[in-house]
Image (cartoon, rainbow, N blue to C red; front, side, top):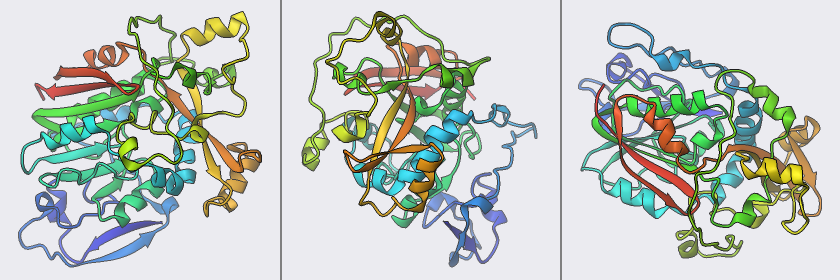
Length: 389
């Protein structure tokens, strides 16, 4: 169920500011850029079942033509099954483990001018929303349960797709996409998500993007993930399919230990965004190599340039969300039981980025230039500046 704000008067005055604001799932509370003179600020909240949420209308440009983002191909089944449904199922447990802010993201957000409007595409549980008290934040995510968690914290949020952001062009001063693009299964969709981030910020606006790196600092970690087999790769036949790329990496990366389950908040602040932030039992896959058994030559060759993986999430049996939904997930093949660990295991789809891939992706997008790029804690990161509309 989503909590939806129902203004008592004059929704049209809000629509004048953004095509997104009237969309069910918005939760605006005291955001000055959203207010209009003569509008009653008193509101009621109503609950709307997730399945009854309306579909976002196509975004229109000023000349009345549909925005290119509305023409993006339909979401591939692998994303629906191994990203959307998984995060819907694990949302409360996932949220409880996502509290450490990545210092690089903090630095970026704290550097923004006073009063900036920041759009967080793929905000998850909202851990970056409101991080800079001198800025305004709006978050969106494809997962309604995660958006509910954000709304309960008082954040301004809505359900939306990263490849079709529900904001007018030039709406925000800055945008962030933290650990999101690697969940998109084709290059076309990843590029579209970048185009959307650039579209929705003003001229001169900044965009921060981070993605998991194939070049993990703890290289043994990758051996615990499950490379996608041909059954799933076949779902990408056609334009935009994942392509095997040769590695251009010449980095010498220092290994770091996996995050221990009992580590402190301060220790968590020193680990990378999400990938290095995971607990060991959130990463180790029951059918993956233990890192000691030798792989055959075929597997070695294919894994050398592998970028498509299933990364497991262990949902403990004692969690409240392990109920009917998880039982159904196991029955339907979306999840499996691991009695040894006492958990229901969900596989999440990831396309991990090779060195230089993120730069190549954004170089094919018009209207922005790269102002910074860096590798940090097993993530490739890039900052863009919008140069033209």
